[in-house]
Length: 304
Image (cartoon, rainbow, N blue to C red; front, side, top):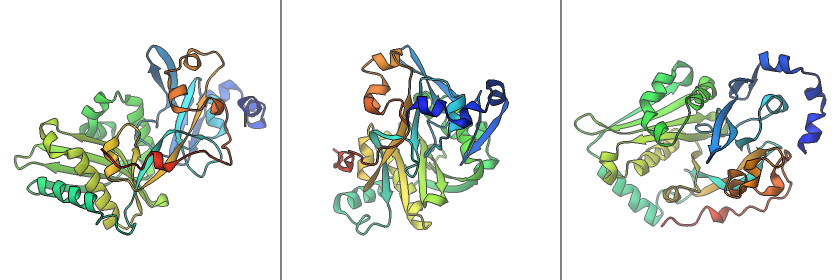
């Protein structure tokens, strides 16, 4: 559906701007108002908007009410695969199908997993399953403040994360050395309706770089997924993280929306995310194409 057609729909026409600005919305695991929906993002000095769930949450539900109050340019990443909206970007979610036959015994993977377990065998491990409704921004910052600073995650995105998990549980994995120093803290969202554990963020101590703490966190999360009866551990986008290919054995398109006024600087800059992530034919279109030219093998090649 082109945006001009959506703009003439009854749900658009029946609401005044004042009514929309004062209203609270809820959809799936998300809630928002017109004032807290979006986060300011930048490509060089070109401003655009993303949603407050963009950095740390998967499977973002979108409806007409959201688009009615959202500013543009707006990039919304990771709509659910079952949605009728969104188009595959040039990246994919990397999944570990933990019950796939031979996954844990495949030669190279099994050797690497054994090495990782050996490196961390003398460290203390803790596992917590925490209701998201019990958490505050201070709790999340305690687990991930250095990670957030490194990847420029906005406080509004931490608030979006808390909103998303308010009716879900988190898995918090932590490893400490023999002196009590934190080696890694890994935080994932448990998604029972998808049989899935989604890896939101991992903060690890650079003093233990030689121990490969990021890889070990992925192993711990995948093992927990298996031990607790879930089907998939989702490592998030894989395109910029080749190390994840050690773990993944399935991939899934990341369906997304790019809504941008014509002749906006973001549209004119060939290095902007509009160009690097999306096909130009998918700009300002909502409905997903029935046939997709998407090759999973682009993301399942062996890691270096």
